[in-house]
Amino acid sequence: MRRICGILFVLHLASGVLLAQKSAAPASQPDAEKVVVGVAPFVSTTDGGRWGKAVTDAFQLKLVRWPLTSPIDKFSFADIAESEKIDIRWDTPAATLAKFARDALGAKILIYGDVTPNAKGDAATLRVRAIDLRAGPTLAVDRTFELSYPTQLRPAVEMVLNQLVGYSTVNMEVPALVKLTPAMERRWTEGGNLVPNPDFEQGDPAGKLTGWEVVIGDKRYNPAKFEGASAPIVDDFLKHGWWSLDPADAKNRVLHFAISENVAATYGVACYSDWIPITPGCIYRFSYRWRVDGPTPKVFLKGYALCPTPGEKEAGKDQPMAWQRREVYRRQVHPTSEADPKRDLGNGWTETTADLCPRHDQRPPHWLRVDIYGYWPKGRAWFDHVVLKQLSDKPVVEQKEPNDLPKMPTTSEEREMQNAK
Image 1 (tube, rainbow, N blue to C red):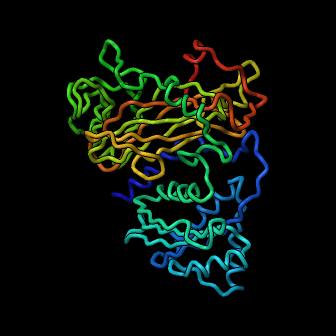
Image 2 (spheres, rainbow, N blue to C red):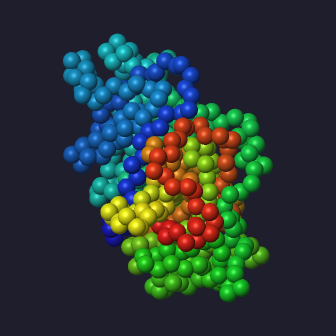
Image 3 (tube, rainbow, N blue to C red):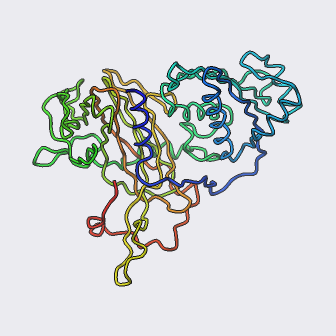
């Protein structure tokens, strides 16, 4: 069952269009010497090296996109290691590795470690060490990560690189060389929240939550008011998302999922915010509060741009080309991992914070939607106080609009547009 859920979660990640996101350079980059980094092949002996290769490749792919680093490619690394007759293991003395990094690789940083998968191979214990010669020939990183799912590998890699080279004060999403200033931090504490109905306090006369829509398979609906904190768990798709009371405060209303085993193991439950206009290339900060009793919570921040509708390019001359908002950017927030900062609020509530910089090198996103998602195992989840604020007053990454982009729609035109979820 867990393997099936993992496959379905990957499908949820890949839903919508293929995100052809390329690395965009910051608008301005000061002159700085790049740090040469070597990544030794991670060892995983019980699975034929599958997990080890995945970890090694994850580090290499991240480093290639990092403006202030110069990674040694894996083929050159293998040739040098063979010529030096060195076998890099977890317990190889730091002094030996420091000498190898300095004299043979010409590197300032050497990353290495091992992976121990579980019996099924869908989870693993990752151990990472790193020598940083800029700080002396000693261990600069010595960490262990428990990866419950393969999707937790990326944030683990980001945490290590953030510690070694530096990126954002919060996470890896903000482009390298961009430093968060005191003015940006003030906008976080003093600026306006861009999320519609962020505290789930507003509803329509029919008792439905406004500004948010539950999506399960082909079912879409605004959550109905539930006069209680814990809705019954049933298989009916229309009874999985609710506008309920806070389990810790009956005066407070929240978004509530009551997820059956069938839905938890297949679609999961998603709840989308209304469209949020944004400026592509700017830095934003996001936070939300969550409480779970069973399910795994995730949040996706999805950026959309106007794109021509597939299949409509051959439309007749008397017909204008159809344009729709399509997903071109995605930021995944990991509330239960170490990647994004968490704060214990008490009474079972936790707050997770994440920085992001929505961007795309061909179709810059002009709208964002918050996708709150819950999946396996079955149980209940509650969400509250969703916040999105713009930190930078202008783009920190250059964004160029396509030449064929039509004018931005007005409010009335938006209502008539066929909007992709």
